[in-house]
Image (tube, rainbow, N blue to C red; front, side):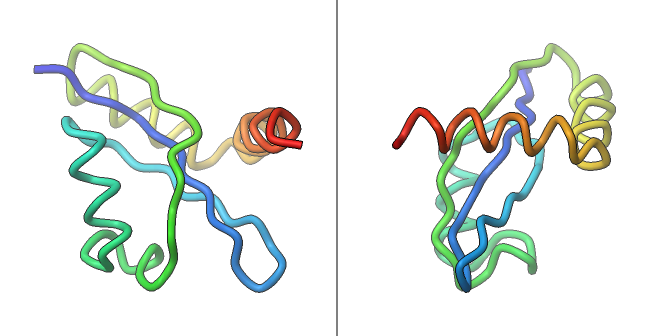
Length: 87
């Protein structure tokens, strides 16, 4: 089975918030976040997928998810690259 690490963003109170997670079904997971059935932090906001990366094992995905969650420099780099493409 394949697993994904993903990064979502949303605009909330004039800020761009980000959320990192892992899943084996990205589309289903985003639907859960956007219908307030995902992680508590994501409830009540509309999220957009801006980054995903594929892994062969769950343990590999969990390690990468943890790394991306803690690496704010990398998160901001991905976020800024996406936002600059949109402008």
